Amino acid sequence: MKRLIVACGSGVATSQTIASKIADKFEQDGIVVTVDAVDYKSIDGELGTTNIYVYIMPPEQELIEKTEELGIDVFPGIPFLTGMGMDEVYEQIVEAAQKS
Image (tube, rainbow, N blue to C red; front, side, top):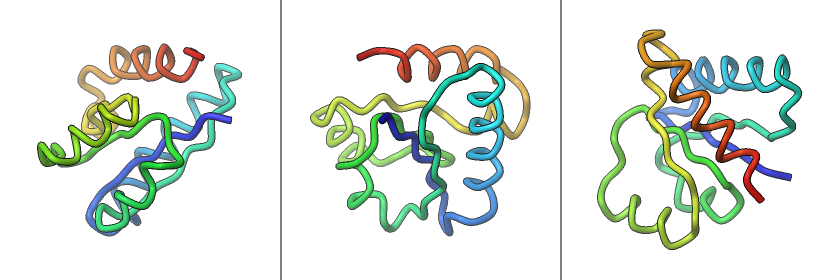
């Protein structure tokens, strides 16, 4: 099963809000992907078990390189807070979730 993580500083407020929005949209669209909110400090340990990473603050270059090595798709999460560009980012996430 595919897994999507949303990471913010604490893994509680912002990431949980975005994770809930994405999970709700997945459920409405019949997409089966595990969605978890995590704190940024634990992200290194989480990357080995995820397929999609949604960030709040742009990740450091080292983290981007690691996601590329692991074949993890990376997307911005702010559109899910502001609503601006949310549909476009969501469609890209759906495409990533549906690829084998």
